Length: 269
Length: 332
Image (cartoon, helix red, strand yellow):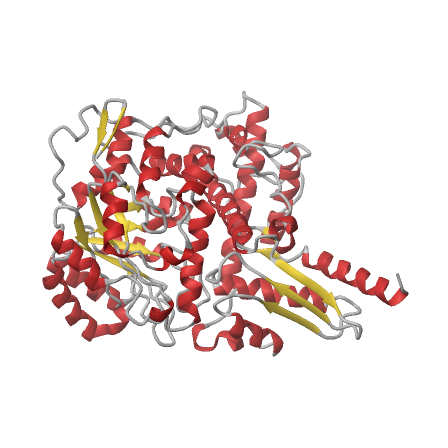
């Protein structure tokens, strides 16, 4: 392979690696693993063009914009990047979003009267959800490993009590993203401000955290499946969702992660 | 009615449509994108034996609807929940006249719900009064991500929404079905958020608020508000077909709903013609929470009967034939 072609291949690889840091905020996964990166091309003159694709034309335009503009930021930060084009394909707002990206118009400049302020609140809502789900995964592993551990006793569990597992590392990342402490002595079961719950409140909070986790995991499965339906060969670009396999066949069966002792709900009838 | 193993089930399909998405009815590219999105849902979640060709999916007509629901589909009563989508389709997506004509021909089998949009303000309010009279409305279907001019959505707690809800209450339209979509104004917030339903449900405690596809993709937010508001219900549109493609996920959805709500506030629907009801009903009757999911109690026969028809029948005063009710206590 000639040196120029080798360099282009290396740069395309570097661009994909940079895109690993761009997350779908709703599904809490990199857009690369989800198969949302349709193509990465480095032209002879060094221009970098990335096409993105989503599971439906009607995926939320605010999330679509966030991912596309985050992708452009990540690519522009590459030291060799000169001209960077990010294009969102086949979306109901493709024209609008692609025009905004090309002009670096920002969120308000892109959406005009539909935008009021910014998307920071949207982002932080989903950072909180991602943290809640990660916390539930980590604590459920702990409960499963130790049948004598009660839910109320989770009140005293700190980060260094967690096993060396991907779920624990994932929780640390989500805490950092939310600005929560990551010291070994920091409590694990906390709200988005880092506050512990009262022991009596814990079973309900854990139960709610599970609903958050079920919801995010379910959406991720559905979106991945829809992408494969919409783009028949896109499955090859998807990586398995880390630490989750709701249906059987994955490395860890999520059902097994869920042997929680839950309070019986009172009959309402 | 569906019968299996000596048990009889009265079936109400609480969310069906008679749509026309043929190219001649599409106003623009979004009309095609919308039906293509539906068709991908259909292809992604249906068993292979239940797949429709694209052409039939665009428009299927009243005769086929009657056959799919009532001849092949075990359904006793179905409720039209039309989406207008006036920005995408010339004559709307849900076909009002055709659906209403069918309802008049088969009043024992069909109920017609209509829609309103608070952004039509006073004019729309007057239209609502005429529609209530003409269609004898008991319920409405609201798609909060409907596009209108520059606006691509509204909230249920907007001031004009409250005026429409007040009018509904006065007119005896007590069943409000809400369908969340991907857009809202401003775009800053999560469009699928159901906090506005929470506020409306508090404001109008005597009305029923049925959140379609049980709040998916925000199941957790939906469950949370439904525990606070006893007049918030779950519609199972879109959730049902996971019973085939992702049965463990389906078990989690049902498990969560039964935990956070209760068995009286969950309604079956096929979302026809996204999916056909026959296979959904048959599989739901056979369904059980997997034994290893010990965090969820097994689903009972009485719960299945309520979900499949008795709950919606109670909400819509649909007469349930003798012997088809729940005889044993639902919760042991």
